[in-house]
Each structure stands twice: as C-alpha cells, then as structure tokens.
Amino acid sequence: MALPQAAAGYGLKRTFGESSGTQTFDSVMKADVIMVIGANPTDGHPVFASLMKKRLRQGAKLIVADPRAIDLVKSPHVKADHHLKLKPGTNVALINALAHVVVTEGLADEAFIRDRCDVPSFGKWRDFVAQERNSPEASESVTGVPAKAVREAARLFATGGNAAIYYGLGVTEHSQGSTMVIGIANLAMATGNIGREGVGVNPLRGQNNVQGSCDMGSFPHEFPGYRHVSDFETRALFESAWGVTLESEPGLRIPNMFVSALEGTFMGLYVEGEDIAQSDPDTQHVLAALEAMECVVVQDLFLNETAKFAHVFLPGSSFLEKNGTFTNAERRISPVRKVMAPLAGYEDWEITQLLANALGYPMNYRHPSDIMDEIARLTPTFKGVSYEKLDRLGSIQWPCDDESPEGTAIMHTAQFVRGKGLFMPTEYVPTQERTSGRYPLILTTGRILSQYNVGAQTRRTQNSQWHAEDRLEIHPHDAEVRGIQDGTWVGIKSRSGETVLRARVSERMQPGVVYTTFHFPESGANVITTDNSDWATNCPEYKVTAVQVTPVSAPSDWQKSYQAFSDEQLHLLEQAGASTE
Image (cartoon, rainbow, N blue to C red; front, top):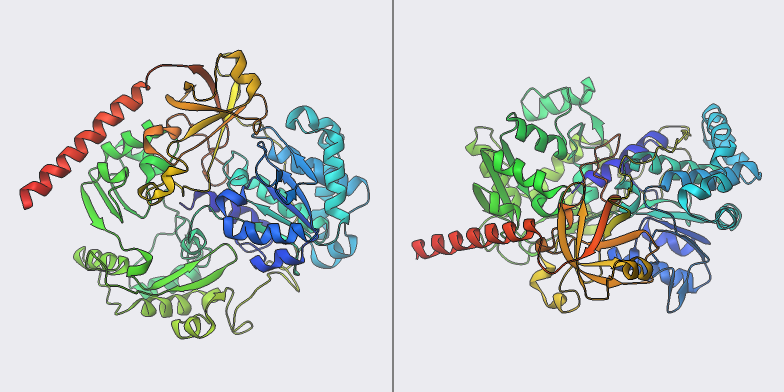
C-alpha cells in the first residue's frame, strides 16, 4: 500500500529534491537526540526499534510526539525525556510551535542555512513560524501539549548535538500529511540536522518493499525514479524502450478508482499483494466499488478479503519461491533468492508476463535479472545496480550510479539533490473531521507487535495466541462515564458506519481519544474510518475519526451481513473444490 508513502514522497521531494529517507538505519547509533513522531517502532518496526533502544540505553535523549503512551514513552530500560501527547490531527500545529521556538530563541543553524539552503525561502518561512499564532502558548489550546514541554523539547532538539527525526504513518495518514512532512524537513534544515551520520529525516515505512514499489513507479503520476509522466524526455525514454505510446496525464489513485467504479467509468482492477477490502478506509464504500466492477483479478498468497470479490484469482509466490529484490526504508536494495519451486508453478513476475502476453503486449524476460538490467538502463538512480553487484555486495543503497558505484548511505551530504534546500510555510488547517455532541471522541488506529498489517499472514500463525482480536483502547474516565469495563463489548459509531469491539480500559490513552488495530477482518475497523484524505496525495486520514462509544450486546449490522457474505463465499469455494475432485 503506497498511499502513505505518497505524502512522504511529496514533502521530501519538494524540500530536499528526493522522495526518500536520508539515512542508513545504523546512523541512529550516532544520534544524540532522537525525535519519534507518529510512529510506534517497538510494535511496527521492532528490528530497528531494538537498534534505537540500544542507542537510547547508551545515553541518547528521546522526544516522542504521539497521542498514546507508546512503549518508548516508558518501558524497561527506556524512558522518553519528553512525551508531547498531542491531540490527533494537530501535527502541523505542533511542528510549527517547535519551529517557532527555534527561530525566535536564536537556535537556528545560520551557517548551514546560508551554505546549504535557499535563503529567500528561509526568510519567508522564518517570518511565518515566528508569528505569535504559531507559538507554543498559542498552540497549546489546539494541540493539547503544554507550552513548557514544547519549548523544552525544541531546545533539546536544536542544541543537543546530532538530532534525528523518525516518523511513521501517524504523520502521513492525515489530511495534512504532506504538509507535516514538509514541516519536519523545515525543522531538520533549520537546525542543520541533514547530511551526516546521526541526523536526518527518516520515514519508517508501512509495509515491506513499499519503498521499492514507489521507486518503480507505483504512483499514477510517476515513472520509475520519481519522474513525472508529463516530462517529455522521460516519457520518450520509456516509449522507446517499451514500444508503446504513454499517457502524459496522471492516472487514478486508489480512492479515485473507487469513486469512478461507482460512477460506472472504472470497470477493472488487478490487485497484487494487497487486501483493499480490509485495509482501505470507509469499507462499505470500498466493497460497493468492488461489486460494481466487471473484472477484479486478485493475485495473492491467500484467499484474502478482496479475493471474495474477485472474478479471477491468481496464486502469488512467497519470498521463498521467487527471485527479485526488496527495498526498505533506508533505500537498501536487498536480494531475494528462490530456495524452492513455487507451489503454483510460477513466480509473480512470470504470471504478470503471461498475462501481458495473453493481452497482446509481448514480454520476453527470461529471469528477474533481465528486469533489473532494464531498470538500470532507464532509471538514473539505479544505473549501477545489477544482480551480480547485489550478490557480491549483499545489498545496495540507491542512488547507485557512476558517482556512487557501490551505493549511497547518507543523502544530501555536500548539497541537496535539488541543489539548495527549500523551506516552505506550513499553515495549520484543522481536519474536516470534527468531534460533536453526537461523536465526542476521536478514534485513531495503529498496529500491534504480534500481528502484521491486515493479518493475512500472521493470523494464520500461533501469533494469534498473543493477539486474537482487535480491541478498542479507551481511557478510564471515558470508560467510567459510559459504563464500560475492561472486556465490555462496545459499539463504535462514526459518520461512516458502526462496528463492535471488545474494550480495553487503558491509561495509555488520553481522555477523548480511543484507539484500535485493524488486523482482523471481522472487526470492521475501517467500516468507521472516513474517506477524508491528504490534500496533496489522497492518502487516507486513518488517524482521525470522530466517534461515539457505547456498551452493546450484539455485533453490528455490518458485521452480521459481512459474516453471512463470507460464509457464502467459503461455501461456494468448497463446492468448487468438490466439483473438481
């Protein structure tokens, strides 16, 4: 799912000139101050979190900006120096308040700005964030974070040595996700924390190989290497290589596809390795769109929730059954090498090639290395990448080209990719999703360590002994006034829909905010999320949904109807299997 990456890519491309993180993961071991914004590394990125905690135990300072008291706030051996417990949806107001302290207290790195950044843009940005309305005191009523805590955190970040920012989907999955990424980039540049070890802007990606997917042009407006489809020279390059005429106008993003399907103008979808029926917001809208299409093809390891709407199901291959590469959040291209024959007979790329040939477009790759050679010919940042080099070096961080033949660990060391770093004002605009007397609480969503994303793989393992269902975390005060106890079944109702979960009363939450995961399809967590999205990229606003929570004694109507639908699909599958025996 690349939509959250779109917001990150947009913000970093505009400010730095490249749609990627700036560091290697090992860089965290040189950080003196670590700021974690909208990410829960111990649950979502546990391998990197272990490295981060090692550095924290060595004495690095930690600032956490999160609505919940995640494990990094306080757990054995690790305690945050500052927990900025902001209200969901107020990220941009918080980053502006932190920047306000930096510029008004003379903490900006003037030498770095003068040498490495676009100075006129800095002047405009400085004048913007210095306004009183962006001060921690003025922002306190918006963010809920005490002004004193914001000032102390800003001073620590600006003066504490090497300072690194790590952020996750809690930044990008907002109506101002792209704006917030720009704000993060502004703060890093203003304090000179770019271009060396121990610093940088580091997005923690939502799924494995999201970075690689986006590198290869999964966005409807870009070719591989983040080059816009409107660029004539780039388009001509690919037209020559592929022997076809390519569109100069961007295609549809996923939310636009659903709208067009319901309008009758988008009739077919090829879904590979994604479960949009469970993972995308406003589930009832998504399912209606899938039902409206004439041809839905799903290629996956398992018959997931989307496969129940498919006209054709094609078997996917696991990482053990195919050759290829994965690219992670540090731009590291790692080889994937087949250790067993695919159970279905074909690797993923072979199925796609067979489909292309059946549709009349000739593809004649003999091996994934042929595809990588084509990528290297057509994509400047991958010019030096080959299977031979990957096998020899073990992995490569792009850019890998004539200047960096073995890859690039740290980006923007001598200058930014765009030349001079660009500062951009980040006006805070409240989300359209507001609380009210009818919907007085804010729901935000996330993940848990033992389950991965929609759970299509991990729910089939013994991991479910640790986390067997999605639960709703609620603050003790909010639970008490509603007559809710730990384990009570509760209805969660939003403007989009209603579902039922079991409650977990928890001090992790702040009053007025509730939280759940989305690992189990029967939970219907995305039935209640809305179709609000980021202004620049259409990334869904998963993190802010106004809801009401009440005790109930039965599943929601949606859960009942979806269970009946699922049972029917499984029965039809059994009948089909019996008829072929």
